[in-house]
Image 1: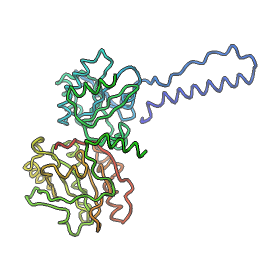
Image 2 (image 1 turned 90 degrees about the vertical axis):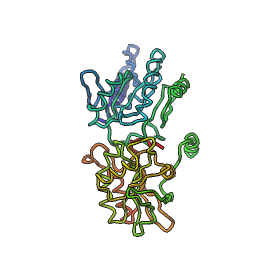
Image 3 (image 1 turned 30 degrees about the horizontal axis):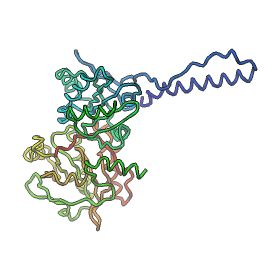
Image 4 (image 1 turned 60 degrees about the vertical axis):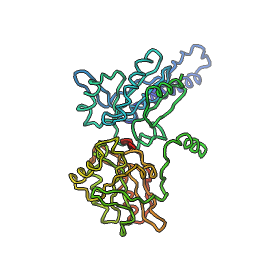
Length: 198
Length: 194
């Protein structure tokens, strides 16, 4: 389960290997190689979104839950979008206070290749009672994912080596830059930081 | 490598650095829920301490409450009592007021000190950033040396599913006169409100 997102990469590499081997064999057997079929280009950077561990839903909202191995995909996308990944929980007061700032960014910069992802660290038992009603009540428009991986020491340093584990915390990245913040943001502060990623 | 660490430290200079394993931890005199002041030096026969920065309101701290009680029960007799400190400013977090701390300690029958870090002066010296955040100290002639910093164990959600009891392993090693193997871990917690 933990290595799920790596499987396509491994499969791709294996595919390339098998092509390489078959080509070599053919070269050994015949001197005329001009009619070789073209080797399909396997782009290992395109990895499909991982399959969630579980999907929590009620009548109006639905949230995908991932272990860290699955969530990692959302922390390492390489395209023309700047991602603003906020780690939060419904029980975290400063997180809830700054959430509207992230929502506003998500709405305002939608056409400008900025995407907010809200990674909830709510405990599994709180998802149905707290998280889903919260998303519904506050009409959260940004994408919400649940990180359900209690062995936090195994993944906190992978998100960022400087993170102590306190929330709120935010990761802003695009294909060229990556910056981590263990702090709260006002709207202006957040907008200013994102402007550095253009 | 050292340059990189230096650069990172410089970059994060607005955040208090706090103790590293091997540092000598400061003593303090903080108000306990029974109204008396408590200091580490009061514990004459202790061989060390399990200092836990924790609080009332945080769900992670609540999830660990029974495990903190169990740690004290198991290790007080072995010379390593739990000293719980609420680092939050009650002005900013009403559920962590001194009165609410007293209520919590009574309800849960805390058999260990539950201290208020009045003025929020002690937690920055330790470098605690969240609750719960544990520092295991060993008493020596030089002072109380930090031997472990981090989480209680590797599963906040389910005590029954724990695989690594970090604090227990650390204290067990110290009691046996051995080196602590896992000296530092990270955990999710509620950021301290100073």
